[in-house]
Image (cartoon, rainbow, N blue to C red):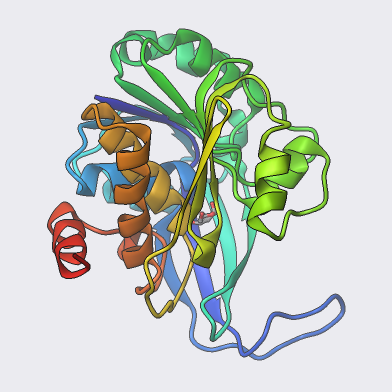
Length: 299
Ligand code: RIB
């Protein structure tokens, strides 16, 4: 079983011709509304790929809460430990997507910010039994730290988004930052070249292994003193929203099935590549048969 501790956001997505600079207004296209949130996306990604997934999180008591609960429940995710929180809105995200598929995102955490250590303690049986516990940074550190402490299996932490002052749990088995998050964790400039990424990732201590997601450049896997660059699958991206979530959900499933880190990372690259070819966060996430067909077509 896979436990995901994290956020649920209702995403409002607008296509834009280009991203606005400060003080600028741009006219965008038609608004779309999708279920999202890094935690919920990772849970749905894992469930669609065959994972048995349970979620620990918080929503408000508004209409958005029902949308979010239905979205994850309909994918087979166990919502027993998603708590409705009175007097607070469900998390929301405002997303702009440009013609190259690149996004900017503003998250209003709402109920996600109320997730605490007590929520994880209530779910301690689940966390103890989970083969993989998946964390991100759209909920308070105290929830992540408690979940990591209670986890009986592999702890996979995706330190996204790069929140100033956020402190990852001390004991993480697999840390999955992107370039920006790696820079935030190490205090280095955003690494451009693969050599720069390797040098920055080597500064990270406290994680068993590090996988840096590099978008169109693939991923960099570091384990002990060894590192391996896995190139990305070539696809034509439409919307890169949730590509990292797709990767993390797939990685969790593969690790729960006992694959090696390298096998899991390659498989997760395929799931992430597929997600970039479709719009929206959860609508874009791949199913297992799609990943297998995609990989078969690349052999
Ligand atoms: O990673 C993509 C997600 O980031 C979106 O679904 C949005 O809700 C934000 O959490």
